[in-house]
Length: 118
Image (cartoon, rainbow, N blue to C red; front, top):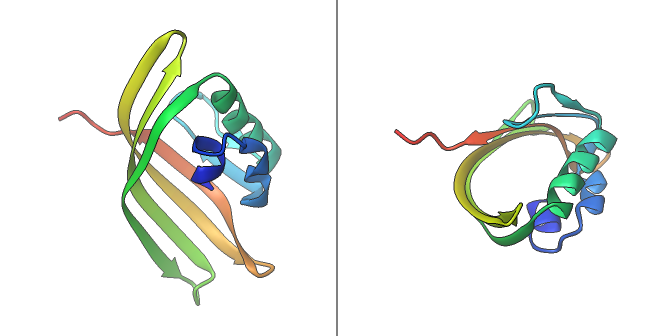
């Protein structure tokens, strides 16, 4: 999923990975992004407004529950991108909730936030 918008610059294909009732909590939205169409639009808007130079997932962890039909995926990531004439290099953390439905894994929730600078 991340490869579609970070490497291939093709966020439109995220609809193949998002559940129709997906929600996303992001640090830049005051409200929860609801529904796969709104989520795809949000990722596309970010992708269209940036030039991504680098994306790296770190320490991914997958935990299965409910007879292997529900999963939590967590990882850290580093990203470098240009936005508004600035290059931003940052570290974040991400948590996805997925369900196995109709023979494929679909993302039902995403919550990501900046990596704390302690």
